[in-house]
Length: 442
Ligand code: GDP
Image 1 (cartoon, rainbow, N blue to C red):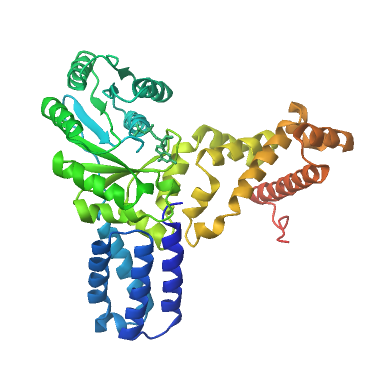
Image 2 (image 1 turned 120 degrees about the horizontal axis):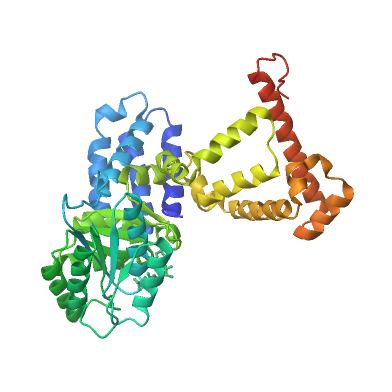
């Protein structure tokens, strides 16, 4: 999970700060030294850390803070503010042309996730009601165009290419022409990556830039490469000029040094973050939400957005009706579980809740397994059993245990939990009908 290591350390420092009623200048300095170490361990750029701590110190050791009623909280608030500003302040969105085509150039080194991210971004743009076209200009990496075509199919966005026998500049030009003729309004150009930055690559990108006149040049960098990602961003920005950064693999980066340094070093904002390998795993980058996650205050807003994206409203209404009539069965249970799973890995979801420290959530993965077991048990029931669980006798339960590969106790436990849930719902619906006194708390 992003920032896990840093988050754990900072929360420890702040716990100490909060436990003291009054703070002296020395207390703050000691705490900030710990913060500094934590940031350096997270691989944040040294100069960035120095400036960051200096700014906080200037703001925090003043009498306003130290003599306030909650000095610990005040210091945390300052750290939060500064983290937000370090990552760029307000969210930085991509902007679209008010009429005509918005060309977007996707650039980056090989393996950073450029092709996958082009697909993810196309899907996101499409979900905003636009008509994107993907253009495959990576004629060097073996199978890059095939990969883009595959990704395009998965997200249902057409891919324009001329194969590998053409010059990338010509392909980009032809792609724009094709978009104009076919009324596409956003063109995402997947340019060629290289293993290292070299002049030939930069020249090619400059040619495409001067020809296509992109509205946005987005650089894709891999968060896991830490300060290398920052150096790559600096080099691309100097040579080509970029408008924003997409930081991929943030899901696998528990340090977060690149994400925290890149804006300060290049003065270009992170616009999106890749949070997994699935094509739906791209999130707009919100500095304030990230800061909140780092400080263990959760990210409830992203959680709500995810729920809204994944929640089927019709189903929710149906469920509510069943809930009221106490007709909830195992099919509904399964539906609910699947809806939850669509929101992403459980530990990622839990990590967005305030007070949840994802580093300590390691055993949540077990729970993810539990979900799969529960699913297997329910799927081993017949349709009739799922809809009418009261017919589940011993021989049926044995059959289900065998079919799902789980032991009978587990099947019994699930049925028992389910029955308890049903009883509660009956009591609830009784209450809702105004039958007082039926619902008793255990
Ligand atoms: P390209 O060479 O830059 O076009 O890179 P690819 O798009 O082929 O991606 C390289 C690898 O990184 C693939 O295995 C992707 O699935 C993986 N990848 C890309 N983005 C992410 C991300 O946000 N999170 C994770 N975990 N993997 C990613």
